[in-house]
Figure 1: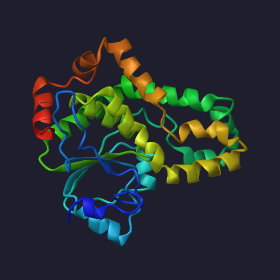
Figure 2: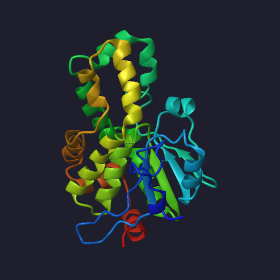
Figure 3: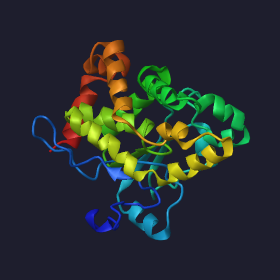
Length: 265
């Protein structure tokens, strides 16, 4: 069954995981094309209908990379495609980035302290700082790239909303493949059209905590400024993207060559 035939009227491959999408099809600066059907990015994969499961199993995914925290994984375990290898690869300090928003429903005052008065946007910039500089992130994203380079079959990687931890992973992979920054940002902000589940939970948090939606909203969407801040930190800490790849992620030339050979037409 071809991927095109699986796309629903709303444009989602898996409506219960609306941020599930193929990283293929993008053009590189050298005029090559990222191959389709090999790398998928997604939000959490824990609730799929019977029809969606049939489609999911048909994508040929043999590696599922879960970037969520242990708490998130335990609370909402993934549905793993038939025959796939599952790998939990943390990219954040344990709970440091506040991914466990559910606990804030039990502590509205803590939610107000964390996210009120413009703190939510500052929080998001701190999240991206950690994704670029923390040891856990450097090790986790290196593992992701190495798995993507090795193959030999399709891989999906995801977090909860598929927009921040997954967003930086997708930006990293596309940049390694030579995709222009403008295209990388376009792929990144496409997550904003796929956040119905995030909106549902965060609006509940807004009501429960008494925080206005304007205080919560920065956490429910991706903004080019978030991604650009991450690339700026790459330059600040490592001198260049190449420096980040070599000195931060410690990826070998052989891994980068394998990734490009595998992923580019």
